Image (cartoon, rainbow, N blue to C red; front, side, top):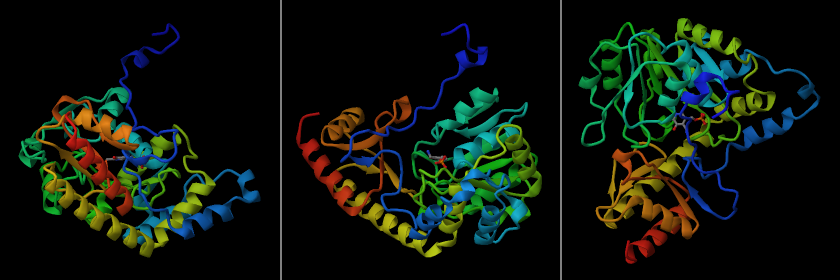
Length: 355
Ligand code: PMP
């Protein structure tokens, strides 16, 4: 508490990011980063951008990057907005598109930044409970609202909605913006970008942090019709008109163009996820059906906080949330096969102890 703080600061409950440990040699399965490196073409483009032009401001419109994204998704360039990670794109969407008198709707178990943005921007919202199978029930969203945001696949469950469900949400709410946060879509779910042309109320948000293995570069983007993009641009230009630096723009263009690298990463993660799901199932864990680069699991008779702490003693970190409804679950990022094997060995050991 400080008398120097603006009153709103006292009311904020900030997001708590997953741990970024300072120790080396940890098996880090807690923040859904990619265990494989980014496209070598992206690394080369970043190196090439460290030249005399760093004296100059970057292109505030990120014209070349928007063109590369538009080309990759077969949409016009004026349908694309880029930001400093999808967190920033989402922040602008909350402020510019989802802040209305009627409440914003999102699942009660979801990306925990959403309620944080609501606090920051004073957005009325209602968290809609997942059903008993931890799934989104569309019927529960059939009520007046000022907008809807859902991750697809959802986080931390990993469960995805099909495109028919997204179509239904859009049709049920023609006068509200529906934001589909596709941070994890490359790992098996269907993208809604193809629906943008026919749905003026749809904004799809993507990131290069997961399947493109560029979490450190901070690049995210949105695809929507120009009316929605114009709102995001207004907010951006009222806040920081240079969100993406020169290195990020150069690296992101090359990463987006290297589709082969992306496809290989996706295949490796999906097959490791399938193997890990099988192995943990055989060890007695309940594993939700994930289409993401993580799985959400619980053990019928071992406390999740204890499991996480005991794994940590073995230098393996996974994500445990304190939220009561999911306090018995662990979210585990899909690592390399060697990391997944170390997790299985660690858990086998830990389960042999009394917990
Ligand atoms: N959306 C979801 C559902 C996420 O889990 C994350 C990663 N924490 C993000 C968006 C933000 O990703 P980034 O800012 O790295 O693009």
